[in-house]
Amino acid sequence: MEENKILKNNSIPLKIWRFYMEGFRNMTLGKTLWAIILIKLFIMFFILRLFFFPNILQQKYDTDEERANRVIENLITPNNPKNQQS
Image 1: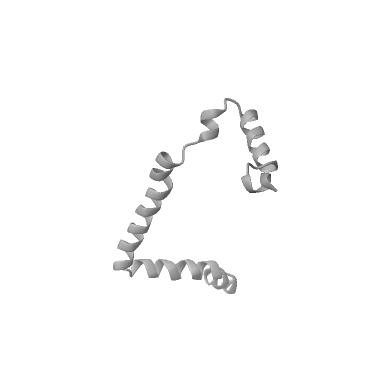
Image 2: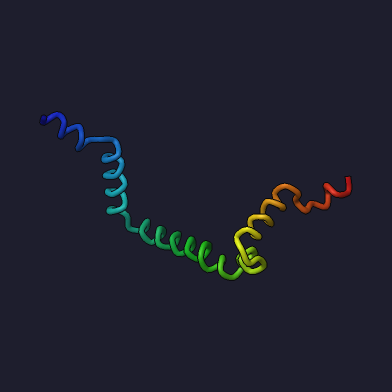
């Protein structure tokens, strides 16, 4: 029974978790760098998406069926000028 507890306490995922937790606890400059990385990811994925990547399918088509048909149409016959010249 003691061996079973020792094996559970020293499992690989637990060792990995402890390794990273100890590393993050002992960081000084790293915490600041991680904060900068998280702020940049927030700006890239939430702020820029709102302004530069609007949901065109939502604006141009009223129903999900119309949107799905448009996507299927573009996947099957894309509007590629190079293919039309040949």
